[in-house]
Image (cartoon, rainbow, N blue to C red; front, side, top):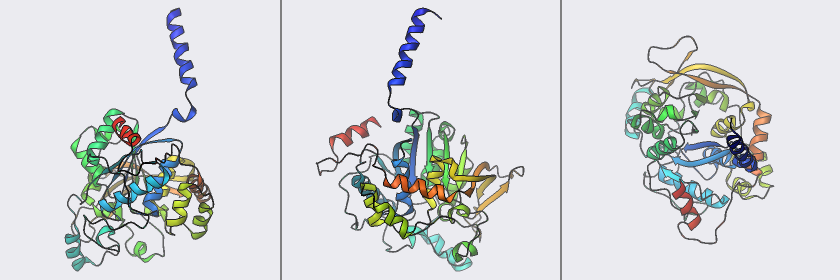
Length: 375
Protein backbone atom coordinates (compact mmCIF):
# COMPACT_ATOMS: atom_id res chain seq x y z
CA UNK A 1 0.00 0.00 0.00
CA UNK A 2 1.34 3.43 -0.94
CA UNK A 3 1.98 6.16 1.58
CA UNK A 4 -0.87 8.29 0.16
CA UNK A 5 -3.30 5.41 0.49
CA UNK A 6 -2.20 4.79 4.07
CA UNK A 7 -2.81 8.44 4.86
CA UNK A 8 -6.28 8.29 3.33
CA UNK A 9 -7.22 5.22 5.37
CA UNK A 10 -5.95 6.84 8.56
CA UNK A 11 -8.01 9.95 7.82
CA UNK A 12 -11.15 7.87 7.18
CA UNK A 13 -10.60 5.87 10.36
CA UNK A 14 -10.26 9.07 12.32
CA UNK A 15 -13.48 10.47 10.87
CA UNK A 16 -15.36 7.29 11.73
CA UNK A 17 -13.97 7.27 15.25
CA UNK A 18 -15.09 10.88 15.71
CA UNK A 19 -18.73 10.03 14.98
CA UNK A 20 -20.91 9.84 18.09
CA UNK A 21 -21.66 6.31 19.20
CA UNK A 22 -25.38 6.78 18.63
CA UNK A 23 -24.71 7.43 14.92
CA UNK A 24 -22.79 4.19 14.45
CA UNK A 25 -24.47 0.86 13.85
CA UNK A 26 -28.10 1.95 14.22
CA UNK A 27 -30.53 -0.68 12.98
CA UNK A 28 -32.89 0.58 10.29
CA UNK A 29 -36.48 -0.53 10.74
CA UNK A 30 -39.88 0.11 9.21
CA UNK A 31 -42.69 -0.41 11.72
CA UNK A 32 -45.83 -1.84 10.11
CA UNK A 33 -48.62 -1.80 12.69
CA UNK A 34 -52.37 -1.83 13.13
CA UNK A 35 -51.72 1.07 15.40
CA UNK A 36 -54.81 1.18 17.62
CA UNK A 37 -54.70 3.71 20.40
CA UNK A 38 -54.25 5.48 22.58
CA UNK A 39 -51.49 3.34 24.13
CA UNK A 40 -52.22 -0.39 24.15
CA UNK A 41 -50.00 -3.09 22.70
CA UNK A 42 -49.74 -1.57 19.19
CA UNK A 43 -48.67 1.94 20.18
CA UNK A 44 -46.46 0.61 22.98
CA UNK A 45 -44.56 -1.61 20.54
CA UNK A 46 -44.06 1.42 18.30
CA UNK A 47 -42.79 3.34 21.33
CA UNK A 48 -40.36 0.57 22.28
CA UNK A 49 -38.78 0.69 18.83
CA UNK A 50 -38.70 4.50 18.75
CA UNK A 51 -37.29 4.76 22.27
CA UNK A 52 -34.38 2.41 21.64
CA UNK A 53 -31.06 4.16 20.99
CA UNK A 54 -30.23 1.20 18.72
CA UNK A 55 -32.79 2.02 16.02
CA UNK A 56 -33.30 4.34 13.08
CA UNK A 57 -37.05 4.23 12.50
CA UNK A 58 -37.52 5.07 8.82
CA UNK A 59 -41.29 5.24 9.08
CA UNK A 60 -44.47 3.83 10.59
CA UNK A 61 -46.82 2.24 8.07
CA UNK A 62 -50.38 1.77 9.30
CA UNK A 63 -52.77 -1.04 8.31
CA UNK A 64 -56.34 -1.75 9.39
CA UNK A 65 -56.49 -4.29 12.18
CA UNK A 66 -57.47 -3.62 15.76
CA UNK A 67 -59.05 -0.37 14.52
CA UNK A 68 -59.63 1.11 11.06
CA UNK A 69 -56.55 2.55 9.39
CA UNK A 70 -57.54 6.23 9.47
CA UNK A 71 -58.32 6.17 13.18
CA UNK A 72 -55.06 4.31 13.86
CA UNK A 73 -53.09 6.90 11.88
CA UNK A 74 -54.65 9.69 13.94
CA UNK A 75 -53.67 7.95 17.19
CA UNK A 76 -50.12 7.44 15.92
CA UNK A 77 -49.66 11.01 14.71
CA UNK A 78 -50.96 12.31 18.04
CA UNK A 79 -48.71 9.97 20.03
CA UNK A 80 -45.68 11.21 18.08
CA UNK A 81 -46.69 14.82 18.77
CA UNK A 82 -47.01 14.14 22.49
CA UNK A 83 -43.51 12.59 22.72
CA UNK A 84 -41.84 15.10 20.37
CA UNK A 85 -41.12 12.69 17.49
CA UNK A 86 -43.25 14.06 14.65
CA UNK A 87 -40.15 13.83 12.46
CA UNK A 88 -40.96 10.12 11.94
CA UNK A 89 -43.16 9.66 8.85
CA UNK A 90 -46.54 8.00 9.30
CA UNK A 91 -47.63 6.32 6.07
CA UNK A 92 -51.15 5.14 5.16
CA UNK A 93 -51.45 1.46 4.31
CA UNK A 94 -54.28 -0.90 3.41
CA UNK A 95 -57.81 -0.24 4.64
CA UNK A 96 -59.20 -3.65 3.65
CA UNK A 97 -57.72 -7.17 3.43
CA UNK A 98 -56.81 -8.61 0.04
CA UNK A 99 -59.77 -11.03 -0.05
CA UNK A 100 -61.24 -11.53 3.43
CA UNK A 101 -64.04 -9.20 4.55
CA UNK A 102 -66.42 -8.47 7.39
CA UNK A 103 -69.30 -9.59 5.18
CA UNK A 104 -67.69 -12.94 4.33
CA UNK A 105 -66.92 -13.66 7.98
CA UNK A 106 -70.53 -12.89 8.93
CA UNK A 107 -71.62 -15.67 6.54
CA UNK A 108 -68.77 -17.95 7.67
CA UNK A 109 -69.89 -17.63 11.30
CA UNK A 110 -73.33 -19.03 10.43
CA UNK A 111 -71.62 -22.28 9.41
CA UNK A 112 -68.66 -22.58 11.75
CA UNK A 113 -69.35 -20.48 14.86
CA UNK A 114 -68.63 -17.01 16.14
CA UNK A 115 -65.25 -15.30 15.93
CA UNK A 116 -65.20 -13.33 19.17
CA UNK A 117 -62.53 -10.78 18.26
CA UNK A 118 -62.50 -9.19 14.80
CA UNK A 119 -60.68 -5.94 15.48
CA UNK A 120 -62.11 -2.99 13.57
CA UNK A 121 -65.05 -5.13 12.43
CA UNK A 122 -66.53 -5.74 15.87
CA UNK A 123 -64.42 -4.04 18.55
CA UNK A 124 -66.33 -1.22 20.26
CA UNK A 125 -66.97 1.48 19.37
CA UNK A 126 -67.76 0.11 15.91
CA UNK A 127 -67.91 2.64 13.07
CA UNK A 128 -67.29 2.88 9.35
CA UNK A 129 -63.82 2.66 7.80
CA UNK A 130 -63.50 6.37 7.04
CA UNK A 131 -64.74 7.69 10.39
CA UNK A 132 -62.19 9.14 12.81
CA UNK A 133 -63.96 9.90 16.10
CA UNK A 134 -62.58 12.61 18.41
CA UNK A 135 -59.51 11.25 20.18
CA UNK A 136 -59.38 11.25 23.97
CA UNK A 137 -55.72 12.28 23.77
CA UNK A 138 -56.52 15.17 21.42
CA UNK A 139 -56.63 15.27 17.65
CA UNK A 140 -53.32 15.54 15.76
CA UNK A 141 -52.29 18.60 13.77
CA UNK A 142 -49.58 16.80 11.80
CA UNK A 143 -50.43 14.82 8.68
CA UNK A 144 -49.43 11.44 7.24
CA UNK A 145 -47.02 11.14 4.36
CA UNK A 146 -48.56 11.39 0.86
CA UNK A 147 -47.41 7.93 -0.14
CA UNK A 148 -48.85 4.42 0.03
CA UNK A 149 -47.26 2.08 2.59
CA UNK A 150 -46.16 -0.69 0.16
CA UNK A 151 -44.54 1.93 -2.11
CA UNK A 152 -42.79 3.50 0.89
CA UNK A 153 -41.47 0.10 2.02
CA UNK A 154 -40.17 -0.71 -1.45
CA UNK A 155 -38.53 2.72 -1.80
CA UNK A 156 -36.76 2.45 1.55
CA UNK A 157 -35.52 -1.09 0.92
CA UNK A 158 -34.06 -0.09 -2.45
CA UNK A 159 -32.46 2.98 -0.87
CA UNK A 160 -30.88 0.87 1.90
CA UNK A 161 -30.48 -2.63 0.43
CA UNK A 162 -30.00 -5.44 2.98
CA UNK A 163 -30.15 -2.90 5.86
CA UNK A 164 -33.88 -2.53 6.63
CA UNK A 165 -35.76 -4.85 8.98
CA UNK A 166 -39.53 -4.98 8.53
CA UNK A 167 -41.29 -5.22 11.89
CA UNK A 168 -44.90 -6.33 11.33
CA UNK A 169 -47.20 -6.27 14.34
CA UNK A 170 -50.57 -6.33 12.60
CA UNK A 171 -52.34 -8.02 9.69
CA UNK A 172 -49.88 -8.51 6.84
CA UNK A 173 -51.71 -6.74 4.02
CA UNK A 174 -49.15 -3.95 3.55
CA UNK A 175 -46.20 -6.33 3.58
CA UNK A 176 -47.93 -8.70 1.14
CA UNK A 177 -48.64 -5.87 -1.28
CA UNK A 178 -44.96 -4.87 -1.18
CA UNK A 179 -43.92 -8.51 -1.75
CA UNK A 180 -46.27 -9.00 -4.68
CA UNK A 181 -45.52 -5.60 -6.24
CA UNK A 182 -41.73 -5.94 -6.22
CA UNK A 183 -40.28 -9.45 -6.65
CA UNK A 184 -36.98 -8.24 -5.16
CA UNK A 185 -38.47 -6.58 -2.08
CA UNK A 186 -38.25 -9.39 0.49
CA UNK A 187 -34.74 -10.45 -0.53
CA UNK A 188 -33.49 -6.85 -0.31
CA UNK A 189 -34.52 -6.47 3.34
CA UNK A 190 -32.39 -7.48 6.30
CA UNK A 191 -35.23 -9.68 7.51
CA UNK A 192 -38.79 -9.84 8.78
CA UNK A 193 -39.90 -9.69 12.42
CA UNK A 194 -43.48 -10.79 13.09
CA UNK A 195 -46.02 -10.88 15.86
CA UNK A 196 -48.49 -13.46 14.67
CA UNK A 197 -49.69 -17.02 14.53
CA UNK A 198 -50.72 -19.50 17.18
CA UNK A 199 -49.16 -22.95 17.22
CA UNK A 200 -49.78 -24.85 20.45
CA UNK A 201 -50.68 -22.37 23.20
CA UNK A 202 -51.46 -23.38 26.77
CA UNK A 203 -54.05 -21.06 28.29
CA UNK A 204 -57.23 -20.93 30.34
CA UNK A 205 -58.39 -18.01 28.21
CA UNK A 206 -61.36 -19.55 26.37
CA UNK A 207 -60.68 -17.70 23.14
CA UNK A 208 -57.16 -19.17 23.01
CA UNK A 209 -58.07 -22.56 24.47
CA UNK A 210 -61.04 -23.20 22.16
CA UNK A 211 -59.34 -21.95 18.97
CA UNK A 212 -55.65 -22.67 19.53
CA UNK A 213 -54.55 -22.11 15.90
CA UNK A 214 -56.54 -18.88 15.34
CA UNK A 215 -54.59 -15.67 15.82
CA UNK A 216 -55.92 -12.29 14.75
CA UNK A 217 -52.99 -10.95 12.69
CA UNK A 218 -52.72 -14.08 10.54
CA UNK A 219 -56.53 -14.57 10.45
CA UNK A 220 -57.72 -11.12 9.32
CA UNK A 221 -55.96 -11.37 5.96
CA UNK A 222 -54.99 -15.02 5.37
CA UNK A 223 -54.13 -14.47 1.70
CA UNK A 224 -51.66 -11.74 2.70
CA UNK A 225 -50.21 -13.97 5.42
CA UNK A 226 -49.69 -16.77 2.92
CA UNK A 227 -47.90 -14.46 0.45
CA UNK A 228 -45.61 -13.08 3.16
CA UNK A 229 -44.71 -16.44 4.71
CA UNK A 230 -43.78 -17.82 1.29
CA UNK A 231 -41.60 -14.88 0.19
CA UNK A 232 -37.80 -14.90 -0.11
CA UNK A 233 -36.81 -13.21 3.15
CA UNK A 234 -33.21 -13.48 4.42
CA UNK A 235 -34.76 -14.48 7.76
CA UNK A 236 -38.11 -14.54 9.55
CA UNK A 237 -38.44 -14.33 13.35
CA UNK A 238 -41.92 -14.80 14.77
CA UNK A 239 -43.42 -14.18 18.20
CA UNK A 240 -46.65 -16.23 18.35
CA UNK A 241 -49.54 -16.33 20.81
CA UNK A 242 -47.85 -19.26 22.58
CA UNK A 243 -45.24 -17.05 24.23
CA UNK A 244 -47.10 -13.71 24.14
CA UNK A 245 -49.70 -14.94 26.62
CA UNK A 246 -46.95 -15.31 29.23
CA UNK A 247 -46.77 -11.50 29.43
CA UNK A 248 -49.05 -9.03 31.14
CA UNK A 249 -49.15 -5.25 31.38
CA UNK A 250 -50.34 -4.53 34.92
CA UNK A 251 -51.67 -1.47 36.72
CA UNK A 252 -48.58 -1.59 38.95
CA UNK A 253 -46.31 -1.45 35.89
CA UNK A 254 -48.24 1.50 34.47
CA UNK A 255 -47.98 3.34 37.80
CA UNK A 256 -44.24 2.66 38.00
CA UNK A 257 -43.70 4.02 34.49
CA UNK A 258 -45.82 7.11 35.18
CA UNK A 259 -43.49 8.17 38.01
CA UNK A 260 -40.74 8.99 35.49
CA UNK A 261 -42.60 12.14 34.31
CA UNK A 262 -41.05 12.02 30.82
CA UNK A 263 -43.42 12.61 27.87
CA UNK A 264 -43.52 8.90 27.04
CA UNK A 265 -44.07 7.95 30.69
CA UNK A 266 -46.88 10.50 30.99
CA UNK A 267 -48.50 9.07 27.86
CA UNK A 268 -48.36 5.52 29.25
CA UNK A 269 -49.45 6.67 32.70
CA UNK A 270 -52.52 8.37 31.30
CA UNK A 271 -53.57 5.97 28.52
CA UNK A 272 -51.93 2.62 29.30
CA UNK A 273 -54.19 -0.26 30.27
CA UNK A 274 -53.67 -3.82 31.51
CA UNK A 275 -53.45 -6.57 28.92
CA UNK A 276 -51.26 -9.04 27.10
CA UNK A 277 -48.08 -7.51 25.67
CA UNK A 278 -48.34 -9.17 22.26
CA UNK A 279 -46.50 -6.64 20.12
CA UNK A 280 -44.17 -5.20 22.73
CA UNK A 281 -42.64 -8.65 23.17
CA UNK A 282 -41.99 -9.07 19.43
CA UNK A 283 -40.37 -5.63 19.32
CA UNK A 284 -38.20 -6.03 22.40
CA UNK A 285 -37.15 -9.55 21.42
CA UNK A 286 -35.69 -7.99 18.27
CA UNK A 287 -34.03 -5.19 20.23
CA UNK A 288 -32.70 -7.49 22.96
CA UNK A 289 -32.60 -11.14 21.82
CA UNK A 290 -31.47 -12.18 25.31
CA UNK A 291 -35.08 -11.91 26.53
CA UNK A 292 -35.74 -15.06 24.49
CA UNK A 293 -34.38 -18.17 26.20
CA UNK A 294 -35.51 -20.74 23.64
CA UNK A 295 -36.47 -20.79 19.96
CA UNK A 296 -37.92 -23.39 17.58
CA UNK A 297 -37.38 -23.81 13.86
CA UNK A 298 -40.73 -24.38 12.19
CA UNK A 299 -42.20 -24.12 8.72
CA UNK A 300 -45.15 -21.72 9.02
CA UNK A 301 -48.09 -21.10 6.73
CA UNK A 302 -51.80 -20.36 6.99
CA UNK A 303 -54.92 -22.19 5.88
CA UNK A 304 -56.65 -20.69 2.84
CA UNK A 305 -59.42 -23.30 2.91
CA UNK A 306 -62.68 -21.34 3.15
CA UNK A 307 -64.08 -23.94 5.53
CA UNK A 308 -63.71 -24.29 9.29
CA UNK A 309 -59.92 -23.77 9.32
CA UNK A 310 -59.84 -20.52 7.31
CA UNK A 311 -57.02 -18.31 8.62
CA UNK A 312 -55.64 -20.91 11.05
CA UNK A 313 -51.89 -21.15 11.58
CA UNK A 314 -50.20 -24.17 10.01
CA UNK A 315 -46.84 -25.40 11.34
CA UNK A 316 -44.43 -28.24 10.54
CA UNK A 317 -41.21 -29.12 12.39
CA UNK A 318 -37.80 -28.67 10.83
CA UNK A 319 -37.04 -31.60 8.57
CA UNK A 320 -40.67 -32.01 7.49
CA UNK A 321 -40.91 -29.27 4.88
CA UNK A 322 -44.43 -29.27 3.45
CA UNK A 323 -45.20 -29.48 -0.24
CA UNK A 324 -46.77 -26.00 -0.10
CA UNK A 325 -43.26 -24.52 0.10
CA UNK A 326 -43.47 -22.66 3.42
CA UNK A 327 -40.39 -20.88 4.76
CA UNK A 328 -38.41 -22.02 7.81
CA UNK A 329 -39.09 -19.55 10.61
CA UNK A 330 -37.33 -18.91 13.91
CA UNK A 331 -40.18 -19.03 16.42
CA UNK A 332 -39.66 -17.47 19.87
CA UNK A 333 -40.61 -20.10 22.45
CA UNK A 334 -39.03 -19.30 25.84
CA UNK A 335 -38.99 -16.02 27.77
CA UNK A 336 -36.95 -14.31 30.47
CA UNK A 337 -39.92 -12.33 31.79
CA UNK A 338 -37.93 -10.34 34.33
CA UNK A 339 -35.53 -9.09 31.65
CA UNK A 340 -38.40 -8.34 29.25
CA UNK A 341 -40.28 -6.25 31.82
CA UNK A 342 -37.05 -4.50 32.81
CA UNK A 343 -36.35 -3.61 29.17
CA UNK A 344 -39.88 -2.36 28.60
CA UNK A 345 -39.96 -0.17 31.71
CA UNK A 346 -36.53 1.28 30.89
CA UNK A 347 -37.62 2.18 27.36
CA UNK A 348 -40.90 3.72 28.52
CA UNK A 349 -39.19 5.85 31.20
CA UNK A 350 -36.29 7.14 29.10
CA UNK A 351 -36.35 10.52 27.33
CA UNK A 352 -37.37 10.17 23.68
CA UNK A 353 -34.22 10.23 21.51
CA UNK A 354 -34.28 13.29 19.27
CA UNK A 355 -37.46 14.69 20.81
CA UNK A 356 -38.45 18.11 19.51
CA UNK A 357 -41.47 20.15 20.57
CA UNK A 358 -42.04 22.96 18.06
CA UNK A 359 -43.95 26.06 19.08
CA UNK A 360 -45.90 26.04 15.82
CA UNK A 361 -49.36 24.50 15.96
CA UNK A 362 -49.87 24.13 12.19
CA UNK A 363 -50.12 20.87 10.26
CA UNK A 364 -46.37 20.44 9.85
CA UNK A 365 -43.39 22.45 11.05
CA UNK A 366 -40.52 23.22 8.69
CA UNK A 367 -38.29 20.73 10.53
CA UNK A 368 -40.86 17.97 9.92
CA UNK A 369 -41.04 18.88 6.22
CA UNK A 370 -37.29 18.75 5.96
CA UNK A 371 -37.25 15.33 7.65
CA UNK A 372 -39.89 13.98 5.27
CA UNK A 373 -37.99 15.28 2.25
CA UNK A 374 -34.85 13.50 3.43
CA UNK A 375 -36.78 10.23 3.54
